[in-house]
Amino acid sequence: MDVETRLRLIKEVGEEIITEEELRTVLETKSKPIAYDGFEPSGLAHIPFGLLRAENLKNMLKAGIKFKLYLADYFAFINNKLGGDMERIRTAGEYFIEVWKACGVDTSKVEIVWASQIMDDLDYWDKVLKVAKETTIKRSMRATTIMGRQEGEIQSTAQLFYPSMQVTDVFHLDVDICQLGLDQRRANILAREVAEKLKWKKPVLVHHHMILGLQGIKKSDDEEATILASKMSKSKPETCIYMHDSEEEIKRKISSAFCLPKIVEGNPIFDYLKNLIFKRYPSIKLERPQKFGGNIELSYNELEKKYLKGDVHPLDLKNATAFYLNEMINPVRDYFKKNTRAKKLYETVKQYAITR
Image (cartoon, rainbow, N blue to C red; front, side):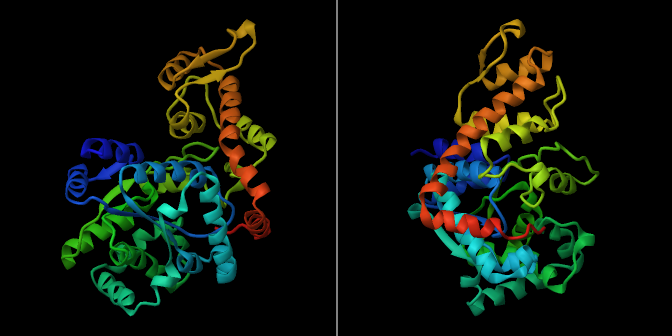
């Protein structure tokens, strides 16, 4: 596969790439560059985890990237996910692996790494201290938003270690590409700055889009704060669609989603259409009574234009979105019904109290 094709596949993943020129150089000089994405095992999987991340991963593998899926169990412990219970966190991590399989990820083609495994290495902690020496307390505090928390929410000294540890992961895993969400930007930028200071390999950043919660965009003066407040979070059930939601639950949640007529920007329904549904379907059908124009099949651009003009009603848009999301989630529900181990893990994790 030529470099341009590989670059195009990765650009489909990255809403922001820092920098495209450096990414091209990596692809030109390495046949199998290493990328990673990290996950705190905590609670049930939602559609950004199951649908978006799985499709991103498939694109990266097609582009010839060697991918490391990093289960950040000790980070979940520090962040007090699942009450900081490591046994529960580990179970949630095993459940995450089953979700990836259910979403069509060939786990034989990726390397699954647990944070608790690499933290047994003294060299890891040597890197942590070197990173921390190059990072001010103020900068660490600002970067704690990568934990899904505001600066004022930090409650323990351990949480201050989190940014330096995440930056260390980049170097200890020896990655060429950080392929994480835009909400992880502060840690990844810090990794590039530390790399320059310590003369370590500077990673390319490929940040994927953050799927909106059902409430839509919650504006803030700070870009990272806006992302944090607006993204779909599995710890906020009222604004979240889970990979195990029934058809009825999906319809109910989508029907109550924020969706103003003739408005596309900040509209979560269009966010799901653009970044999830139309990634898989070249066109979708809207089923409408004949008196309202009858059924119509549209590409994304055609749908957007018609919606902006008022030719498509929000209810018709929501009905179609619920239908296609259900179609995409259905194979995952089936997998967890038929796979005994996966079903047991799901039933166990489902009983855990939701924590932020």
